Length: 73
Image (tube, rainbow, N blue to C red):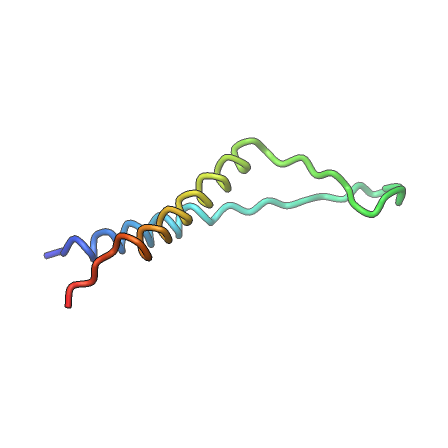
């Protein structure tokens, strides 16, 4: 049977595997002018929100791991 620690570990792994599988490809125009060094690439709103949520979730998981996790010894 699953222990509580194993369940949380599996949920975290599942979240990381499914949350980071999005790939965004940037396309350069064929005849682009070289006026500046950097070009603005518009990212979809869903991708921005997903990256922000994933980052906050990882920060929360890290804080929980280092501050609140008590190992069974």
